[in-house]
Image 1 (tube, rainbow, N blue to C red):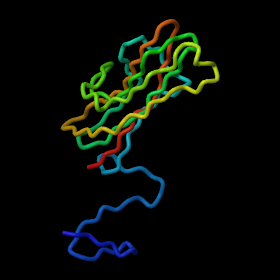
Image 2 (cartoon, rainbow, N blue to C red):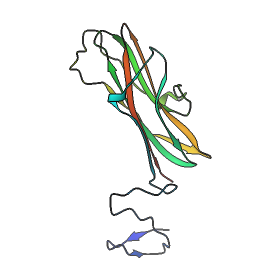
Image 3 (cartoon, one colour):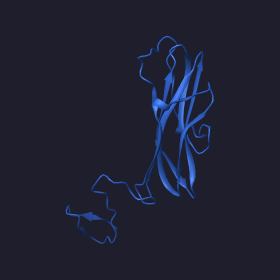
Length: 164
């Protein structure tokens, strides 16, 4: 079966149902394709991390259905610290890296002395992950950073869009 749109919002051909997009800046209704859910921990409210320990930064609740989930993890490094790595992921388990490492984004941080108070906070964009749920489930934005001497703060955003 094919669907042909004639450019004037009319439908021709054998189609009997059409998925109509919005024509304004509103949001899709909960439970409908296009629904958007977001959780944010702003940089100004960044939380203290413990070295080499996965930690939840923020979470969202997703209802049954198929979702595309992604996020961004940022760290605010202390210039006196030496960093080994930073890992970010979305996970169905609180304070736990997702067991599917293909869902991780990671990088090696700057060595001590390479970071100054004017260095931009390093950020990781996480790959999109398909999540198919039979019931309401919480998803977590996780950050794991290894550092010695001093401290590190984490912040970020997790978001999901219902795809069907």
